[in-house]
Length: 116
Image (cartoon, rainbow, N blue to C red):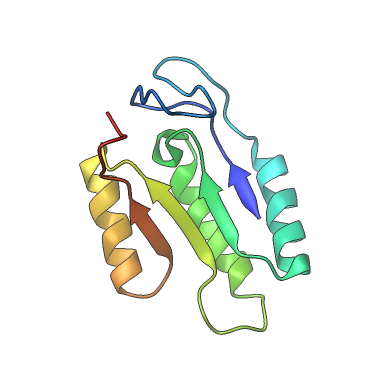
């Protein structure tokens, strides 16, 4: 289940299908995020956290911790929490890389000709 936690972004990519950009957009509330997690776990779906740029959500790390916690409630041992970042927030990107290396989550860094 894709949970778009923010429509804000710190880049201006021409191909963005959500029209995300700096200074504009909305952030998902904690209540809506929890409801999404509950639906994802009940359906046995992956928890996919996205945006905009998810790391700029003011509660990103709390949301990620909650997603990992909810994932542990599933019967499957493999991690099923996934997200993508543009890596502009270097500290966050490095922390996510360590979490991916350690098997806590799956994270992708978008670095291609399409990203500003």
